[in-house]
Image (cartoon, rainbow, N blue to C red; front, side, top):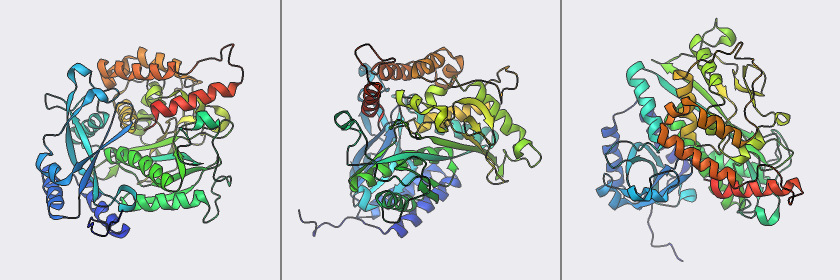
Length: 476
């Protein structure tokens, strides 16, 4: 079909980066919401080449949902958008299904035309309950309110950066077809840091990094990871809400780029037996008036007392929140100590098997790294639960808590028991959201056999079944 008569906006990557960095700076400076809203609406009205705005939001499990609104309709009706919440997993029951979708204008992204389509912009939405308040099942809204409250009351700015690992497999829909093929085909077997220029993995990484740069991610480094066909594309830290949004965009970009190249980007924590799984190492710090509160040149490992209390509270609640950080059957395949997996509930500056690591840092970069996070977790739930636990959690009366012989669960059923039985998770989420989340995870777990039955002999059969179900129900 000819496109000669179409005239939709297509900006260069350089122009996109400039616009997105400018928007990011407004978020950093906390420019008033009404000022940003007016500016964005004016841009949409004046820019004739924009045809539609893609609104993004996430369900309780972290699965990303998108709606395309005609630009002219959105400009007129942005304050009266409704949708059926009963169709979204973990949201309202059918009898009370109407929810509203607000627009978080500060999270507006100018989108590359070759990835998202010409004449489109992206913006994150906020799910609003019938009474006008933030919807309790929308963890993005919960995280945003929590961060804003800490800033208002204590001047705290929550910062985060995530190192998200994934696999690149040959063929489109490699996960969907796994039950037919029984295997994933690597596109590269070069190993850690090793990939020749122009090979499929390197081309994928380069293209994805370019898109991230255009979206204002402020890239740092990218490279093949330890396992064959595994990758990691790192970018700078940001305020906690921007960091969570960027996790969702990162995975969306990777999948889009891979599909265009005839391949599949997978964020299953352990898609292949016998090689390292994928994690989402989560780096966190807290600043106030531009000062990093985790830095103390005289502190142990140069971490401040606030930082160590933050670590101790996370360790205290390690088993309570494990299901939030590792939400799928496949997640627990990754927590295998033979593959550098962080399954020990302890803190260390050097031991990568520890749940929490204290990286080498300075006044600017001092931080805490939570390593036992799977890439298929809800990023808003992950960052909210870690920051809330680290700041407001209880301190367990465990001798030498930072080096105690304690371990994370090796299966989702134990994680579910810990989650359901913990009073802290009720404090975190409220009883209603906690129960809904647990029910979703229980259903996911029950679709996969816990132990091999007498009729299932090869261990691989169970694993294949788990991977396929994990794709169907936890992919987003």
